[in-house]
Length: 241
Ligand SMILES: [Zn+2]
Image (cartoon, rainbow, N blue to C red; front, side, top):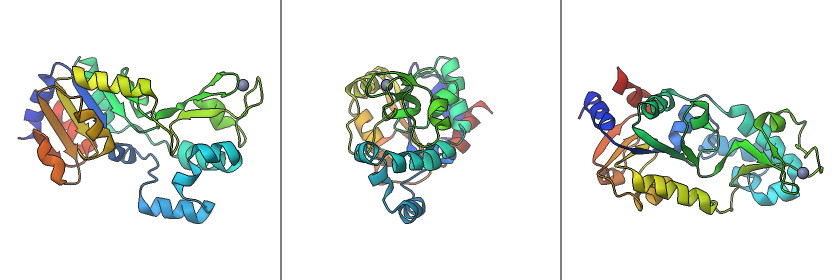
């Protein structure tokens, strides 16, 4: 099947649930700590692995180092939504996309103007004082000199992000399961069907077709009805050419 036919299939979908994988985020220039070179550089510089630093234990006990990492490695490397995101926005405007679901914390769907999305692990855009419950935006945290303190009670503001070792909030699991269960098409971008994001979603999918666009080949590709090997940012925008 070629890309023109992919466009026809997507545009004939009543309601698409789109899973936005980690490779889409790295294609947008977002920091990818799973990349082995990045992970090595982090461990060399900070003396801890990305998983160790980006944990609730570190936020609670070593907030200075946590926020040094958070500013330099996360907030300074937010990237920009790539063509795949802009295409999803257009597909949403035209009524084909029901929801975009991602584990990425960089707020890519909202930055592309997409209205309906589920950020399973939260995002850098939402921050809250754990003590008094005051909400803070991204700029407040970004502009803080080191640790962002609550201006009402002085507590350390907490990014509303699932840190290493924490559970995904139930309402996020429920929301994504609902969106997937209502979809007739599951569009998987930038991850394999074995990824946690895809495996969890497929359990709830009752629609008619799974479409995968991912650069790397994987034995699990056979679960999909349609497979395109390549970067979503290169392939998906072609449906409107
Ligand atoms: Zn507070």
